[in-house]
Length: 307
Image (cartoon, helix red, strand yellow):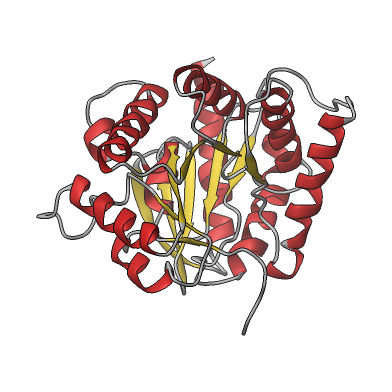
């Protein structure tokens, strides 16, 4: 298949993939938190140099994509605030780019919390005003909540001149993914016309469901239906301050569910369930919903006892 559309490839954990894709795409993205997973004997600096070498050879841009849910383990292990760890990680890679003399890159700093997205992007823009920023609220979830969270972050940042490109990340069936582009364009149009539909800060109260944007890493599209089922099933807990994370893959799922009270990450034939950072077990798709409901009821009971 051929297209004239600019393509971007996420290298995920396979940084060496850049050698194969750079001749054919406009941009590659790497996550500093993923560079440590393979070829541990090769330094991060050498891995980035490899990416830059092949990107530069084909006039391919690079995005340094930092995600709060999959931070550089060296930064995360220091016990500092996730925002500080994310900034430290991206600053390290900005320094590497400077040493390599490579300027054709941009940065993204993403979280599922729209307030955190605002704060960290403002901090980065204050320090590195000349480096382009790609904005995104990761794991924003399903409609309408996902659009609301995204609007809060984007409207406030774009109105201050912060942000050069955007990505709307929603949990949608693959056939509906075009809606992310429609919503993103609408947000941009509204900002330019001075129409603001959100509030300056996001005040999370009650049940919070976060879910990832059903990307190409999803190994079973039943994940999208499961996320919707979890949302519908958990309606009885709407007034309780509980976070449920539903993730579609085993690449980011294990780490990106750590901060949730209940976390689900989906494999091809089963769903892994976590209680905080503790793995509860793996369950078939047709059994997981009942177990999540039981865990949710237990959490609510404990909250009532705690007063």
